[in-house]
Image 1: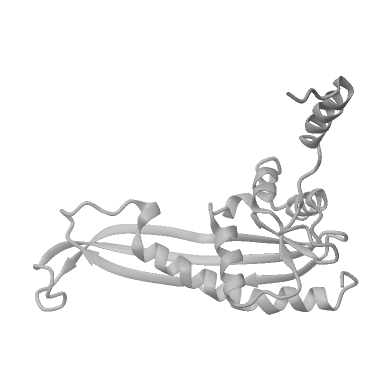
Image 2: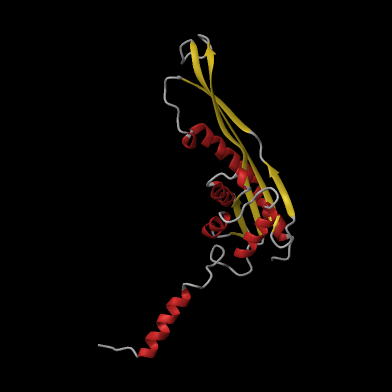
Length: 215
């Protein structure tokens, strides 16, 4: 049996303890010289859970080049401790971005994300799949917004206002309505809105960074 000297064991134990205190890499592999963009679910009033990850994935599908997205876990943990109110959203974005080493902060939110239900009268022949009488009308609306901020200066580089997406469907009022968070029409519009935002962002972010001193 090999017995390790007590001094060696003490050094190894101390190294293990210290490793837990070291900062985690801020980005995808923490590649030196590659600028990072922190995608944040904000401002708080427009926060839509999961939206930041969806935007990142949509940008990736369109060929992100020249920059990395900050680690999602690092961004999400810091999202929760900042208020991201209208008066503080730029400052909070600067603080969050600085803490994780990002050059740009992208706030993504949904100023409009709702579903409205009501009863309308359906005449025979107008909606052949439903009998005449009262039917449930469901209207869904989605509109996204993005704000690109330079972390070092707090300058708002660009604001993106997405197109309004909406849809209407008719249902039997006696049928149970789909839960809001799983509404297929709402999720479909959400996907289209994310795709529209990503289409602009993929070149926009690259353009700002290529003309900066981050290269």
